[in-house]
Image 1 (tube, rainbow, N blue to C red):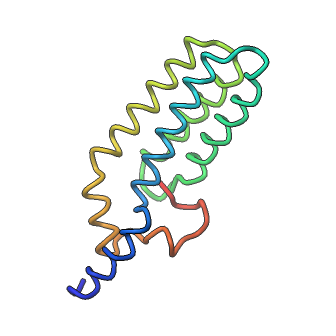
Image 2 (cartoon, helix red, strand yellow):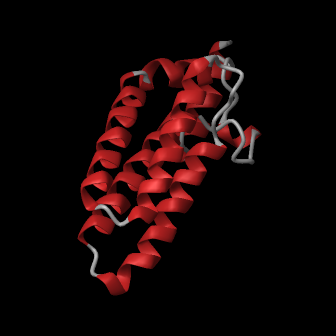
Length: 136
């Protein structure tokens, strides 16, 4: 990438998010909603279950299955989490929160590398792919 191209990328990113930052935020928010669901009274539980399920479905929809086993394994974990959201078992929801936390920490660990790959054009910027497809 040319110096001018890198500068333009940094300027665009100053007001926007990288793909990895969006992914980390999605995982973090899903963890927060699961924690709220565990503490919710019965009257507020259904709305939080729906919200948590939508977030997990967002994670699933962003998986790109062209990349070996990782997306398949994350998809299986998401399936487990979705089942637990509706189970009503708070200890299982806590385990789901730990699963999401572990995945998020892994993505945080590669944040710099992923941002550089996006900057170099190896990963398309979010603005060029407005669908949920290929977020993760």
